Length: 39
Length: 303
Image 1 (cartoon, rainbow over the protein chains, first blue to last red):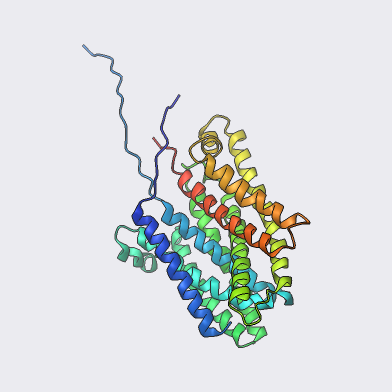
Image 2 (cartoon, one colour):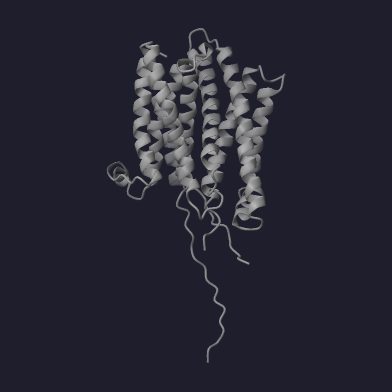
């Protein structure tokens, strides 16, 4: 029988801020492109 | 004299693929799903989706260009991402993925160009070329995980189709939200194209069923075939372990069953508000799915 503990993982603030930053950037670029192309 | 010793030791286990990689998979899935929506009118000829085709192709391109930023940010030395472009290995899924990640957005841009020029013939040709590329771009994400034989949660042939179907589910949900937001708040007549939204909501409802079916088959297979082996442990991690809340509540109930009920119940299936809520829930559920599968696959230590 093998006993083990699950490997713990908690996202760091660094990772979360990158995700939020890229999401905001994505939405901004999409909005600009939609505006420029007059879709 | 040799004494019998019992040695207790612990090895620190790292979790190399974290939330940034899960988010990368999420973005490529959203892109592939948006692309599929754009092909409904320009490749398959469903005229009622024409109003959403251009939005969908722009969204697909933007999402796919932004997606690799998560991977680059995840690298300890981000400048080394260029190695994937310069060193091709025919047996490496990541090498093939790098090629597809380069070709697919270029094809999307050409496809979008002809779409905006109203050149239906050329748009159709590049739309047809784009479909296998979209499948490849997201299918390879599933393959990357499925080929890791030591991780029982990943090592299944169901992984690529599961990733593909969830990509289409999340892409359609995002398109519904974008179309509603754009037409309701940023158009002159403030009128939402209900024909397109209702059509997409029907497709979304039945792709949710397919997604839940694949997840169910995967979990059943893990719990049954390996009976008390590591596959069983991997399934239990999702059912009773630390990811149970995210899996059962986030992915299955909120991300699958509730949206399906909202999209198919006679009282809510025609309501714009209910469709929008269902789409938000699906987006949350699929993000939970990405985290469950990417992070969960590494939570059982290898030694």
